[in-house]
Length: 227
Image 1 (cartoon, helix red, strand yellow):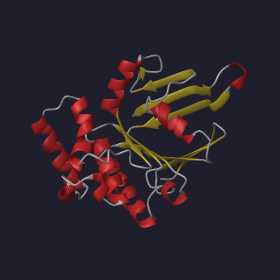
Image 2 (cartoon, rainbow, N blue to C red):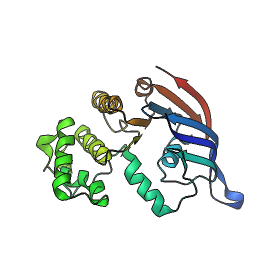
Image 3 (cartoon, helix red, strand yellow):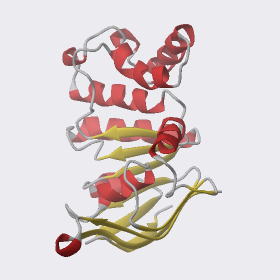
Image 4 (cartoon, rainbow, N blue to C red):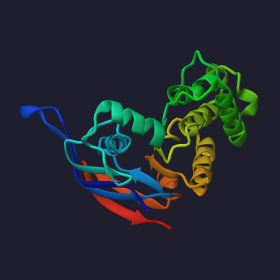
């Protein structure tokens, strides 16, 4: 079932004589339950594409259809609601708050969705159990390893039970073994029905996905089904 569709999407930064085309005529369809990697050189438009899919950035022209609804013309407040409900975000350097505990970091999206504290505690404890972090629930972020921090970031990304997880270089700051462990978590989430899109420079990571999308100079160069 189709969940994301981009039709002739362009993204241009700047104005007048200082325009930079980040994406050019991107046509892309993503179906529910896919595990996708986006690869390409630095500056090719990978992160821009991910940010557009996650409604963090608006397109310059074209159409973005999410769950059969055109969303590129929505107001920021409407897009914020869609983000909190539909997407979970994971980034390379975790984006965790060092002064907060593991629990407090994961709790943030639930506060925006106005979930009661009792339910927040239940949800977070279940997720930490799944990610083998139960004993870290009250630890400060500064007390964790890089791999543990990324698992906390994943926990925060899935705490609102989003349909789609968007991961921008999620293994880039980790050693190979820890990076593989993080990818295995994504694979398990995908088996549970999550649609997962991973931006990566690591071809070994990309090759373990169902599909590889290659971007160069803002153009979609290749779209390969692996499995």
